[in-house]
Length: 173
Image 1 (cartoon, rainbow, N blue to C red):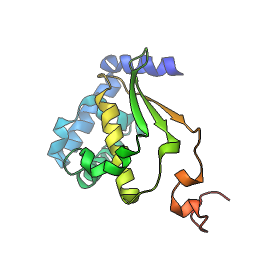
Image 2 (spheres, helix red, strand yellow):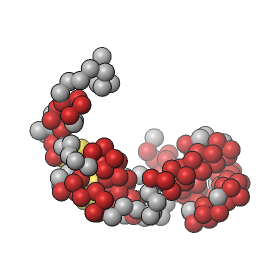
Image 3 (spheres, rainbow, N blue to C red):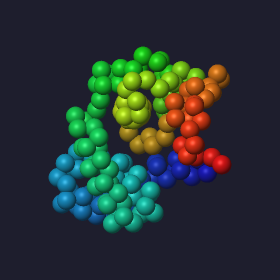
C-alpha cells in the first residue's frame, strides 16, 4: 500500500484529473478567500484526497480550515512564550528524518502533566509542533513519523479530570 501512495505522490505532476481538480479548487477557494493564493498545490491536493476528489467538499473543508487557522493562530504561528509550560516539560523532540525523507518526532508521554496553561496551551503546543514538523518536510512529502514512548505513562499524565476519576469524563465504558 505504501508503494502505491508513493507512486501516486510522484505522479501528481502527470495525473491530469488531479491537476484539473486542483485548478478548479484553486479558482473556487481564491474567489472566496484571496489569502489562499499563498497555499501550494500539494496542500490543496491533500484536501481533495481527504474528500475523494470532490472539489466542492474539499473546497468547503479547506475554507473552514483557513477560517479556523486565522482564528486559532492569528499570527500564523505561536511563539515559544505562548506555550512556555508545555515546552518546559521537554516531552517532544524532532529527530531528523528517515531514508524516505519523512521527519521523525519522538514523544515522551510520561513527561506530560496538566499545568496552569491548561488545555488551551496544550492545543497551541500541538499546533506549534505540527508547524515545526511540516517545516522540515521537503516539497512533495506528505508523511511524517511520530514515535510515542509510553514508558512510565499513567493516570497522572492524563490530567486532573481523568486522574481523579470524575464520572462522565472518561470516553470508555
